[in-house]
Image 1 (cartoon, one colour):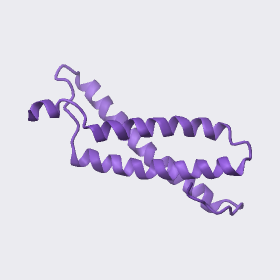
Image 2 (tube, rainbow, N blue to C red):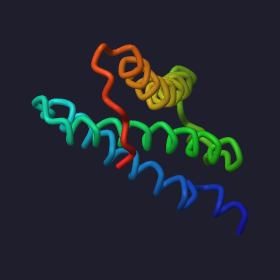
Image 3 (spheres, rainbow, N blue to C red):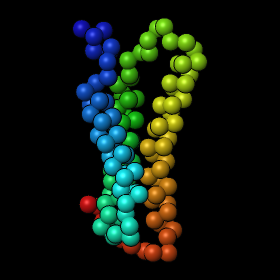
Length: 116
């Protein structure tokens, strides 16, 4: 039974993956369609904060529940590339919201952030 559970990601990891994928795709669309609309700007900031906290949750979950091993037949370069892409995605999922928070903090337009 333990081997079967280790052969795939946990339900929590899968749910976090798809929730974040959906939010990130929506944020890309929203970012291109804000059109000086304050409500959309506030929604963009709220979702950005949600993505940040979900990324931290996801990283903590991954640390506490290691992912299944990579297939044994993978070449060393593929293993290295897979690891590098995962690290890059986590860095982006945490770094981009922090960058947005920084930009809002130093903006001359001091608009209060309202969470949802």
